[in-house]
Length: 258
Ligand code: IPE
Ligand code: IPE
Ligand code: MG
Image 1: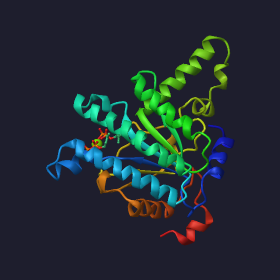
Image 2: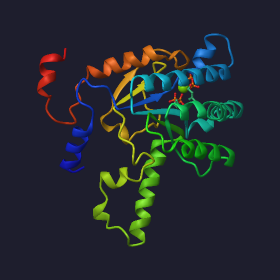
Image 3: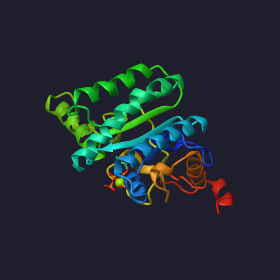
Image 4: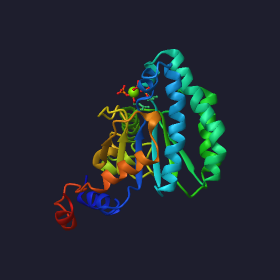
């Protein structure tokens, strides 16, 4: 990456001590929440949707500009068929039931992840959510569905390779910006804060490229228990972090960080 890109990344990121502009959520722990209560995994997912509603309302309340939620990974297809069906059913119901409220709250919905191999009814629903809300100016809710970061990066590499093969692109021109411009997130700023619930401390193929300089907060609670207070706590932790982007520690934090 050129020096100017680094400087741009550092200067467009929120100030130290400021609220994050883009929060990304790895909503994990539904199955364990259900198991702890002797309930079927489906019940954990159903309560997980309620936690998602709370998260969206909290993000609006806290004036976050972008909220990305990991709702279904490219690898989650490997789960038992009934569980996959119930997760698809919940997504369907979430969009059917909540689209009007999201739209009423000026939320713009965006979807990232591979669309090509989705059932037409799911693909149509995702497209409808984006189209209905595209002119909204409040929170941008980015739904990562059938999403895998390695697949996303591979698709970007393939698109660039095709341009080179057709003689439309000089390989010398392929830099980090050229790749970023071909990711699903091309027009979305990188996440400032990535929160994962359930105590697991891994990315599970989520936003690998975009997370280069994200701050991570791992919460011990299970996703169905996530609420406004949990988001506030994660943001408070984020505000204590020094984001250096490879440079030396900013002067302010030398005196205020502890
Ligand atoms: C997150 O909860 C929901 C999805 C991955 C779709 P899990 O279903 O992964 O719950 P655990 O990790 O098994 O507890
Ligand atoms: C990540 O959680 C995917 C979502 C939250 C949608 P997983 O539960 O699928 O991740 P692993 O398998 O524990 O890494
Ligand atoms: Mg899990």
